[in-house]
Image (tube, rainbow, N blue to C red; front, side, top):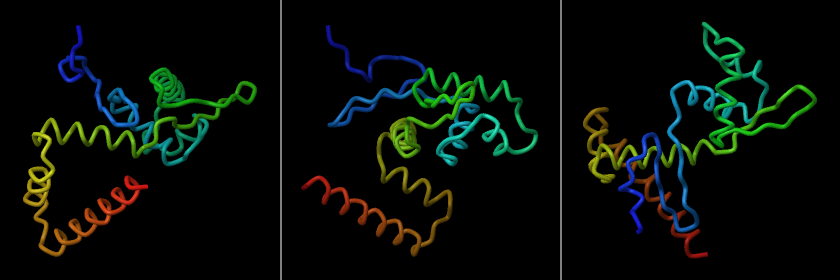
Length: 152
């Protein structure tokens, strides 16, 4: 028996089907996202270096170390070992994580409609006409770029 992925009610999982691959990405907790944002910014780092990037009050070393190990189990982070020292680096690019979760957000809150979402943000942020034109130009540029790469 085959069951559509969308019908599976698995908590904290996002399913996204792409022509190239199937991506199943776990939603991160706020603490995990906070560590990932720092690691994405650093590109690689030791736990002690990550802690320096946190605002005050800084979390305990063991707390960040535990979160990093959880992220490693989830497949978001890996490390290079240098003796007893671990240099951590992100495995999932920030852009991919953002894209998957943004698409889920749009589907969940705006019926998978970009125009509805754009209208909502235009209304809420009180965007003026020139800003809307900038958004349109940027969107057209991205679409042109995608069409160019798709045709190659």
